[in-house]
Length: 304
Length: 92
Image (tube, rainbow over all chains, first blue to last red; front, side, top):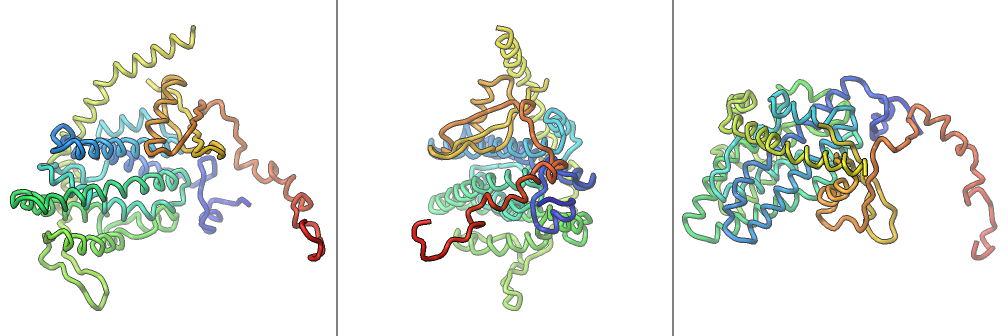
C-alpha cells in the first residue's frame, strides 16, 4: 500500500529516500541529520584528549571504544543524510567552514578525568532522552541509524556512571573532582534539549511531520526526573537551588536555564568553539595524504 | 576527492540472509570491506559482509510502485488460506 507523503505520515509509516517529500521536509531532515552527524564527530574531542592520560588500561580501552563509537555514529548519520541527496565532502566542508552547527555542549572543555565520567552520565544521558524518540522519526534511514546509536549509547552512559561511582569511593580529592565536574556540566546538559518551547518556532512543524515526537521542554523534564535520583545515588548535589520534588505534578521543579549563555555558545562564543573547529579542520587536512594514497592505490589496482 | 559510495549488507548469524545496514565511502572494494567491518560490526553484529557500489544497484522506484507490484495483488489463490479444507482433515 502506498500513497502521498501526507498519507504515509498520517499512517505513521516511514518516508524512504526515493519517496516524494515536500522541499521543506527534505531541507529540515538534511539540516537535522547533518548537524547530528557533526555533533557526533566533534563530540569525540572533549573526551578524546583524555585517552592518552587515562588512569588505567581498563579506562583507556573503554574510552577508546567509546570515542570510536562516536566516530561510528557520525558515519551512520552522514550515511543517512546522503540518502537525501547531499554530498559527504560537502557536509565536511560545511562543518569546518562553520556554515553548519553542531551541539553546543561540545564547546565546553573536559578539564579533569571526572569530566569523562560526567559526560557519560549527563551528556550521554541527555542524548539518550533526545534520541530514543528519534528511533520513531518519520524518515526511515534516520530512524534506523538512531536505533543502532541508541543501542550503543547505553554503554556510554553506564561506563560514565560507573567511573563516577569509583571516584566517589576514592579520596576526598577525587570526590571534589566529581562534584566540580557535575557543577560545570549540569546546566549545559539541560541546554542540549534546545530553547524553551515558546522560543522554538520549528517544533510545531517538526511534530506534524513526525520528525520530532516530543517538545524540547517535555524531554528536558524527563531528563531531570531521571537524573535527580541518579545524583542522589551517587552522592552529589545538582547545582540548582530551586530543584525540588513537586508532589502535585509528580515531577521535579527546576530552575531556569541561562539562555543568554546558550545563545552565546551557539553564536560561536563558547569556551572551545574555535578550538573544536580548528582541530577538526587540521584532522581533515592532515589526513589528505592518506586519502590521496588510497585513491592512487585504487587507481593502480583498477588498471592492473 | 570523492570516494565512491558503497552499500553494506551484513549476515548477522549463520542461517540468516544478508541485510542492508547502511553505506560508506571507500576508495576500493578491499577498503570498503575493512571500513564496513569497523563501522558496522564493532559488537559482533556479523559473520559475513557484502559491499557493493551504490551505482551498481538497480532499484524499482516508488512512483512505479502501484503498477509494478499490481500483478501480485489479485492472486489470492497463491496463499494457503485461499483454500477451504474441513477441520477434520488432519495434517494439512
